[in-house]
Amino acid sequence: MKLQFVYNLAFRTLAFAFFYLVLIFSTTNADTVDNAQSSSKIEADERVTRQLDKMENVEGYTVLPFGIVYIKFTLSDGRKQGVFIGHRTGWYHGHEIRNVWSPALKFKEDLPRELSLDLLEQSHNMKWGGWANNGYTIRFVVQISANADKKSLWAAMLHSVNVADELEEKHTQKDVF
Image (cartoon, rainbow, N blue to C red):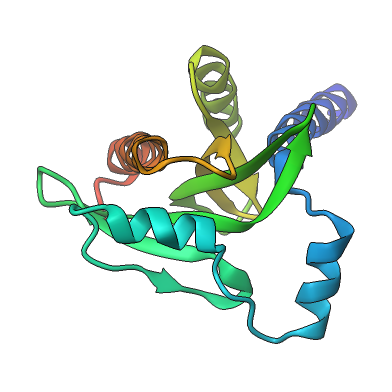
């Protein structure tokens, strides 16, 4: 019993550490934090909206609080899947990056062990992006340049949506997100 507890604790710690590292790219600079605290509504990053406005295949988007952009996709099989584009950016070795993510699964309790291992393996094998745990919501996150052109932004959105929807359909047979 004690060994099982230690194993579960070690596994949860490892899984949490991995998901935390994936989310580390969403950190902000001090100026963004100050703006978020001084304003109840943050506008979307103009670099993002400018590219979205150029996309013929995007019929519209919603700016959520804190400047996050939300777009609902209708996939070729009729399923729907949302994608979010973060307002906050972070820096990595001189490159300004932002997150593009799509939710896949929501849990009321801890993530099942088998699924955690599967997501870790999938993240390892992905060429672009990885799985992240945001509380009890599993989402697929792609990091792109904060100055991405419309082709790169479109590719990040589409990749995130397709990967997340595939996992959602496989595990729930529902169309939630």
